[in-house]
Amino acid sequence: MAQLRAEGHDTDSVMVDLVGPAALLLGREWEEDRRSFVDVTLGLVLMHEIIHTMGYEYRDGPKQAGRVRRVMLASAPGSQHVLGLSIVSEFFRKAGWQVVLEVSPSAAELCHAVKNEWFDLVGLSVSVDAQLPTLGALVGKLKAASRNAAMPVLLGGPVFTLAPQQAERFGAQAICVDAREAVDTALALVAR
Image (cartoon, rainbow, N blue to C red; front, side):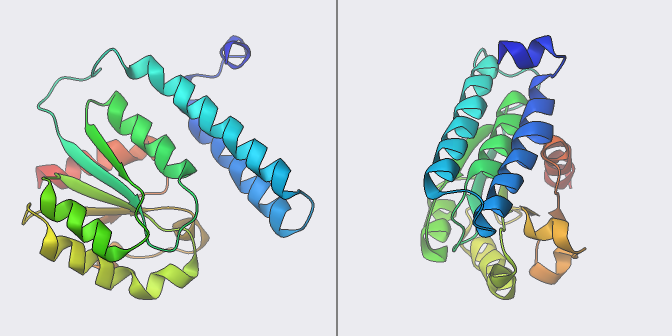
């Protein structure tokens, strides 16, 4: 970490401009059989360690004033990775949000989470095209189950970098593909 800072990289840049592309490259090389399971596992462990270590910079409390807002960040059912969510969660924490990172394998468990706790916003990460046909139903179920009748849903994840999509198609309020913009987008949605 010290070397990255000495080279002029700030925390946000490391998370978005270095870790994110490195994860994509690692995944591509796995798919092309150029990396072994061990290589990929070790690479992901190191990336998670970087995110975790850098996240401790924000543990002294919020850096921005305002009432505490709560966000639940989750992968759409069927996703196998949470690296991107871990990055996004650090941006929310840095901005003073209380973050719940929900790693649930089913829509029912995600609905249970929003039914039991108040969230100002839900952010869903979508990894692959195969998740898109059921995404609208998932968003609808989350909104119906939520304690917050006006809870907006923010979509993100790798699938939205492949082709432009409209959030309304899925019943969501916005799509964000850059972790650095996620908090500002969320604040705009919550303010509505």
